[in-house]
Image: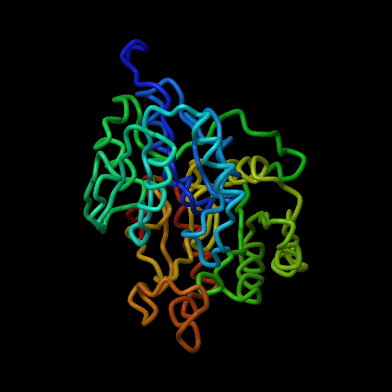
Length: 351
C-alpha cells in the first residue's frame, strides 16, 4: 500500500494472555500494512510478547477488570492514567480483538470516552453507538482467522505477500550456549491452568522415554516453574532451562527446536510463531478448532470428546482427568517421531 493512502494511528486492543496476543499477530500485521502507526493495548502477560511481533510500534499496558480468570477490582487511578494515555495517543481508530466468550463493549465505551473516532469489534451483543463496525463471525474457526476477519471488516486486509501465519520479529537472541548443538526436542510442561496439562510425573516419564530413544531434550519454563522443570528433566540427561530464559530467549530456543511438546499454553503458540511443529497435549476445555497451534504441523493428543469439553475449566472438573490421562509417554514419543519423519514419509499433517 502506498504510504500516502495509508490510514493514520491505529490502536489494537487485545487484553488477555500471551498466547491470545500471538494468535492475533497476523491481524496486527494487517493493521500495520494499512496504517502509519500501530499501538497495542494489552494486558501484562500479552504485552510481554509485543516486542517480538512484526507490525507493532509501541505498547500500552492495562490489566482490565473485565478480562481474565482472577480479575481485580477496578482501580480508578490506573483507569484515569490509561485514559490520559489514550487521549495523548490521538488515535484515528481502534480495533478491539476479543475471544468468543469476551465482550468488546467495556473497551469500546472506554475508547468513546477518550474520543477515538472509529471503533471496530466483533460483538454478539447490541453495541448501540459504541461501535462503528460491528462484525459477526462464525465462532468455529481458528482464533487467528477470527481476528483476521475483523481486521478485513475494519478495512485492513493482509497484503498479498503475507501468508497469514504467526510470525516473530527477527533477529532472535543467540542461545547457542544454552541448547545442544545437535537436533533437539523442546518440552514445555508448565501451564497456568492445571486442567490443561499433565502431572509432573507424566512429563518426566515422557522426557525419559524421549532421551532413551536417542532424542536430545531441552526442558523450558519460567523462573516460577524451576521446580517443575527440574523434576521433569530429572536425571534423564535433558537440559533444564527453567528460569534461564526471558521471553525472547525462549522464542529462540523454540525456534531452534525440531519439535516442541507442550500443553495448550502460550509457549505452544510461541513455537508455532517460530515455525516449529508442535505435539500438543490439548485438553478440550476450550475447542481445538479455535485454539490449537496455528499454521504449523501439529499432532493433537487428548480425548477431544471428554466430559470436560467446552467447560473452559481451569481446574479439572472430572475425576481422573480423562481427557489427558489416556495419553501415554509412548504416544508423545510416537508423535514427535511422526513430526520428525521426512516430509514424504509422513502420514498426513495435523492429527
